[in-house]
Length: 113
Length: 110
Image 1 (spheres, helix red, strand yellow):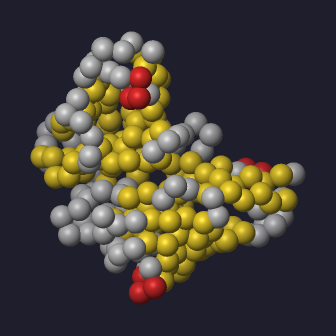
Image 2 (tube, each protein chain N blue to C red; image 1 turned 135 degrees about the vertical axis):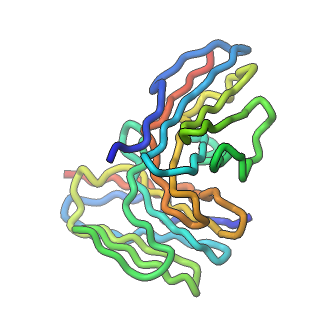
């Protein structure tokens, strides 16, 4: 069974631009979560989607948004990029029940200049 | 929210040595996972262990949920074991996110 895939793997953007990242979960998984990893803040939860509905949201500004499609694929968007948005963005998928094991993709490394 | 503390923050070993990594959490959990982050950043699942003991080759893990801690044991360490090990928990209810500890950076020297 194929794992979680994320595209693109690397991205360089300029401050003020916007970016869209994509995540395809493991087949049969209906929950997709997004995390941001930075050296200073560690791994922080952004949001989680299940059956196209956002169930949880982390403590991030409204510039960070996401959505999930009917095939469970998910996208996250960051508008008006700031230098501090440079990070590794990780996507995880699970079956969706509370406490389900989560499986992570390889991540998208975003650099904002 | 739930707090997760990992210790030690850094660990340096000689190849062949054994090690124990600890994860303390502040509330009851319905999910606890151990991950190894590879050099490219991907989190590799090691154990899903909200309670009990599991073993996988040279690695084993134990979670004592009533005392709110988990231990990851690495025996006969190899240089390829180097990297950051994360513990992450989920506290259940309507909360579906994982809360991560800050990780343990393991360096295994030849």
